[in-house]
Image 1 (cartoon, rainbow, N blue to C red):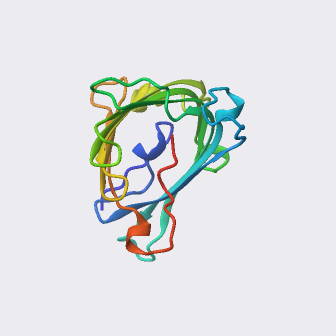
Image 2 (cartoon, one colour; image 1 turned 45 degrees about the vertical axis):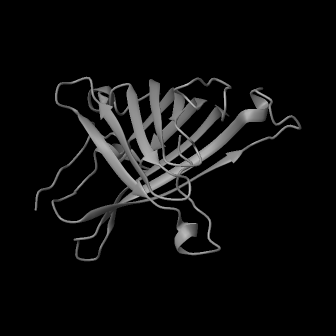
Amino acid sequence: RRHTRCSRDWSSDVCSSDLHDGANAKFQISFKYRIFEGEDPNSKSVLDNLYFAYTQFSLWDLAGDSRPFKDTNYRPSLYYYLSDTGVKNSVISRLSIATGFEHESNGRDGDDSRAVNTLFVKPTMYFGDQTDWHWRVAPKVYAYVGKSDNEDIAHYRGYMDLELAYGRPDSWEFAATLRKGTRKGYGSVDSRVTYPLARLIPGTAEIGRAHV
């Protein structure tokens, strides 16, 4: 078993404690809530398009003796989100924008505490028919506004995530998030394959694509 202990270099889902070469899984739940919705559906005001979102994920050691959950990450955010900016052309079928504040923490205290605060801007570009198979490209650029216990986090995370996805709303989606640290050889790729739960179990709702 190969163990990796991350201390001051903790960085979201890139780095976790006591993982090994056996089977591991990530359990995640996400949601977003529109705080206030005005009478005008086309409004672009900040108040009418202000959202609160929350994502929580745990790394699950499937090969451990008691199948324990290892690290858990908590990620609340408050942001302005415009689903359709009105920008479109022969290539881009829709452009959305999100910008706001995000906090990430492992929920621990003392020497084990890992937390970081960021301000971010995330445009999302859609290519193709959004009711059918189409591409989604979303660069997320951020600045650190609080990283007292993670001073070197940019070495591992950098300043931008790039999300690439190909899928269909009522079917499969294949996605990956790329991250490059400021140091040579530091970075990560998080790949995901998702399918709507309601298609498998009628009467259920999908939870999990709400994170920004």
